[in-house]
Image (cartoon, rainbow, N blue to C red; front, top):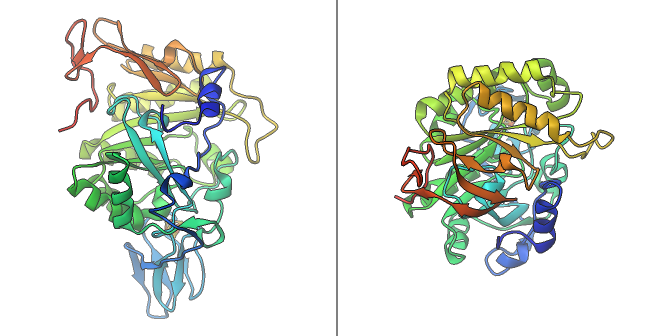
Length: 377
Ligand code: SF4
């Protein structure tokens, strides 16, 4: 558990992994990435130009149209005299080391540590955001590191980290930076993992799938009104994007944060599970996460464990082979059971694997294959 401070670890294992804010271990990288308010601009990758110097970003379904000098909804892109430029490039506000289980990924190289990278900005407006200070700011307004793409890969290498994670804020908002790190990282035999709300258009997602080894997708509910009112977003494009990941055969896990009084309706969650089974299959791990009061939803209570257990059981009854409870530990819902013999093949405490009986991607007891990425190839 090198990537977690002792305080965070204790908080994690005692009574629930309360919140999951970033642990800013910038000192660890002080020699690699000097602290600064460094600003590097690059041309945005997906956009179109109009003859009157307006531009339209095509990265996410908002498809922002910007007049000259206007900044977009996600706060990372700006129209510079008819060119759409990203300001979220080479200037992470968070650079830290995490276990991959924190994303959450339970079936992807367990125990592996990642270099986690985030740049300010987001194309959602979740009222409960744990990292709102970074996600709801322009990159230019944050204290950032100077970390060009090559240096990011070099920093990971120097720390013997073989996984790059794009997480904490919304990687879609720093798409160009993520892409330009992913390519050299992949060439060096490293893995790229993306934790995202997946509010992204099909073309940029298709390109991202070519260098991504695993997605941890926050499917935050199953109701358009909830997406609109609480997240400032919409559900339909997320469902479409999930199907693209499935078609592209990139490893996928889903996490759904259950917010008391907002998206904890069991009938709605049953609908969501049925959609997953029908469109993504039963082998996609689904994590039900505990809400912790934060940002503009501080007056709510934490999700009762019984609510999470109801969703967890419902998913298993519907045929999901690997359902989990996230943000509550210890709990048997943190562990991995073999879908065939039902024995526990991985036991966890917080983000830490305490016992594993997976051998070459199969159950150590009955030899049935366990879906996931278990070995380096
Ligand atoms: S990624 Fe940002 S700039 Fe592009 S369409 Fe979405 S919100 Fe607008």
